[in-house]
Amino acid sequence: MKPAAITLPVLCVPRVGTELAARVVGVGETLLIGKPLLGLIASRECPGNVLLATLERVPQWVKAGRVIVSGFHSPLEQQVLRSLLRRNGHAVKVLARCFSASGYRLAKEEQDAFANGRLLIISAFGADTPRVTRVSAIKRNELVIALSTEVVTPFISKGSPLDELLAKHKA
Image 1 (cartoon, rainbow, N blue to C red):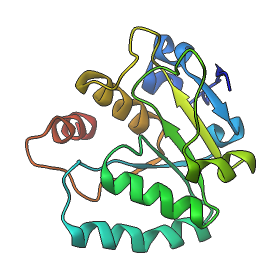
Image 2 (cartoon, rainbow, N blue to C red):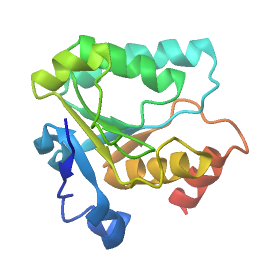
Image 3 (cartoon, rainbow, N blue to C red):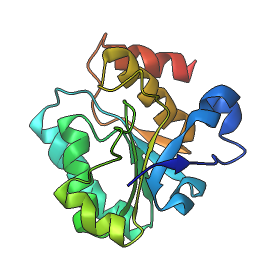
């Protein structure tokens, strides 16, 4: 499956910048990008009690019809994606790398959601970013924040690049 250009909502363009907005491509249900998005960002290392408390919120998000946008990269984010998709929730997955030359290969848990129009996978990275790097992960998280109408941060490691990004966003 080959990615196509994605048109971001007009209100998002000033937050992400016109250059970045023009580079966003994706596969899946493009209508999801126009809905109010709940951003989910968490550090890689996270206490178990925070993970469990976050997973308990997923059914509420699904029931409320929230569309979750995230990189779904950290262990907590990955667990939320699995739970969300099992409950027939909707998600926008933001990659921190380009789509490969052969397109995107869906993970097993993504296949049903993709087929049923509950998943959109996007990237703003070109062929010069074939793998996730620290820089691309930060830029991906900036895009998640820019697309979100609300951001949930269950756990952020103090002093981490993610902590700095969120502090900059709040300022």
